[in-house]
Amino acid sequence: MLRRDPSRPAGWLTGLSWSRRLQLASAGVAAMVLLWPVVDIAASTAWSHRGVDAGRLDAVVVLGSSLDAGKVTPLLDSRAQRAADLVEQAHDDGADPWVVTSGGVTGPTPFDAQPVSEAKALGDRLVALGVDPSRLLLEERALTTADNLAYALPLLTRTDPGVRRVAVVTSDGHVARVRLLLGQAIADGRVEDRYDVTFVGAWTPLADVRAAMLREVGLVAGQRAGTAVTSAVRQSQRWSGTSDPV
Image (cartoon, rainbow, N blue to C red; front, side, top):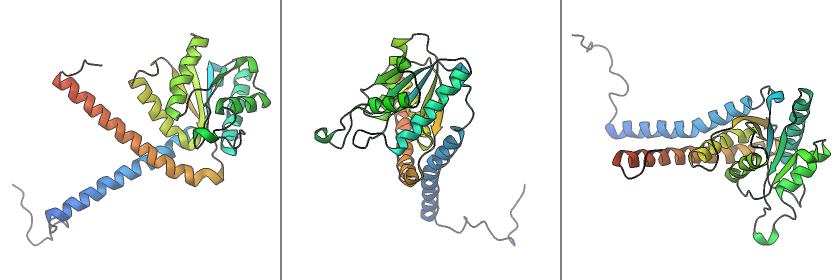
């Protein structure tokens, strides 16, 4: 049986009290909770700029964002430019995808809402960039990112039941959260699990990078925590027999 040599110093943890060890463990868990969203967002941002086989696409969904006096902001214009380039690439490769712009009438309060919906402003910009109006669909109900996907994808299916391969265009730093929200929407039954979704990132304007990063880290962390809690509750219900298996 191996024994520790008493002449060798004990490990640094050995000399710590249990309360100190608990503090260090808690700090480690907190660091992981904060670090993981940063890693997830960074990886998703880089991955969203990969090449896309546009010739296979049935549709392109462009997510809305806040407007400025009814006009697209630089951040939203970047999404429009990326979507228009993707549609042009699809045409060059022999495809003719539908294009959905998603976003309702938003504003700080109902009393000073924007004069047009995000979908309408974004759609007008896409038409100006060369997108065929006859292939453009406006989804004007969504007020949140989760709504964007929950409303836009069913709209596509109602318009063309054959739609399967969809590119979702949003700002690159936003992709991690949108991917999580799509998974949640499928789990909740708001979106059918029938789509082959590709996430495509548009460059975030430099002036928006810091604010966007801080916002997304908090929201991705919250989304992951919420998903974990929901999964645990559903699992406990299945074990206890209080809900039907899903």
